[in-house]
Length: 251
Ligand code: PGA
Image 1 (cartoon, rainbow, N blue to C red):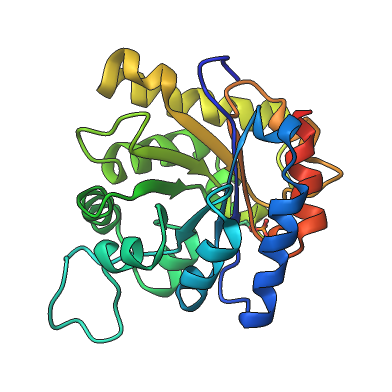
Image 2 (image 1 turned 30 degrees about the vertical axis):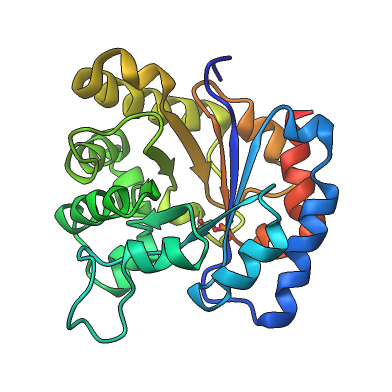
């Protein structure tokens, strides 16, 4: 981690959480003490139904994000939500191209790229997710696969202010399996090389998060790997105690 890059610990609640769960965000705010807030940013991405209440509970101390947005601002797209709507509800960021969306909704790199541009137009930080499958890892293709995803999913005009990359090996998501810190550093280095080739010096300021089975007991090792600027946490972000324990890896 470079001193210029402020770490970001982000939580992805996926399709979990009812109104009663918003209390966890209040607990996160209470636990996000001055020592922690001096060092890192926190972001929590609840289901869209809870964004308004989550933003109120977050009191401006923790950022609130969405888990997807449409490529358009408005129109005849039943069931979809635009970046403008999410921002209006209280979101300041949006996860894009999560492997579950790529798999469940057939989202291509081109779609993710268009969504990132839409997110920027709506004033949202785009958190663009990439990661290889177990088969691609076994075949030794992980670096090439991830580099190609970054090339095609990240739009031109990406900056450290409007974009964060999240590296999430698919085989590590929700499985309890994690790469070694050296494996994480290898892929993060490859991602930064692609960013540097496209965006020059700007790439040094861009945050690259690791995601996939980040837990309180492995956070320090994973977050301490070279070129890792934070975490994208699924299951362990549902409870304030676990999420804060991961964030405290930075203390
Ligand atoms: P996990 O999910 O922490 O539950 O593995 C991570 C993610 O999918 O963002």
